[in-house]
Length: 63
Image 1 (cartoon, rainbow, N blue to C red):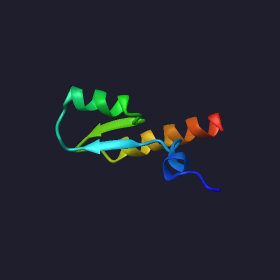
Image 2: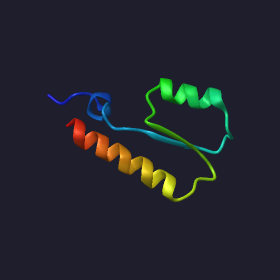
Image 3: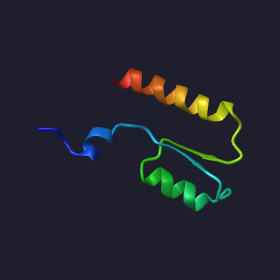
């Protein structure tokens, strides 16, 4: 029997990109909810790439 969708995606890192401005409370909430990263628009093109590369490297070392 397959697990729930939440069980299947529990280990997928989430990178949150927002345009709501630099709100420390929002960033804190995102990290408390399990976000692996938090970026504020406008985003330099290299920023998400670096985050994803670091997360992929971390996951490959973990599993």
